Length: 242
Image (cartoon, rainbow, N blue to C red; front, top):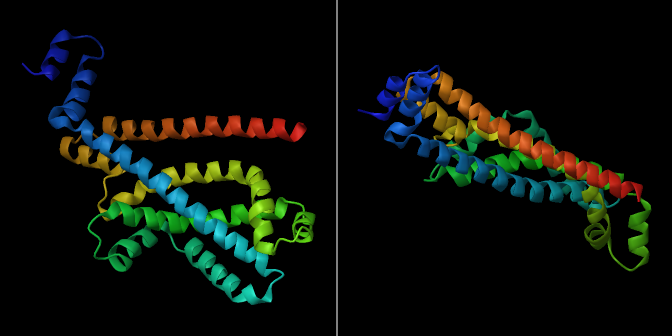
């Protein structure tokens, strides 16, 4: 007698549901597919966030410094092109271009997806970071120059550390958006959480339990991140009152 049959034999209002859950997720160790998908989703999100922060910071600094440095106007123009293209093309199309064209010989889609999501995130991070830089008093640049530092040194030592406090909440919001956006990684045959759920649904024909479980996992992760964000915002507000 299988465990599913034992659940049914035990009776009770939830017996049939427990039996179905066992058949869907436990039989053939299908739950391991969800664990793999969850792990890949976390890797995709954090990897893309790191790349997005690096690209966004570089783009934001170039555009800020180019306002008073004619020699950087060409770099600022390239940054504008990058921002326009990345924000104007759907993420799924970008992902397909990276996987089937730019990295067409790649055997592992996870690194490709991380780069694709990171490049996309960088375009949004750039505007967030630039707004944080603009929120810092303009006199800070002059103060740094008066201490003998050049504009880039002043940006790195004085302005960016102050800008971080303004953009941390926005970065957390971008992290939440990025987490949900990675659900399209299945387009390049990578097993993220959404694709794992879809594979189980295809094999078991149990759409209700599978898709609701995937939705619940995403919802739980988002709620946890939102709680962390609220605590961070409260701490920043307390710091402003001091």
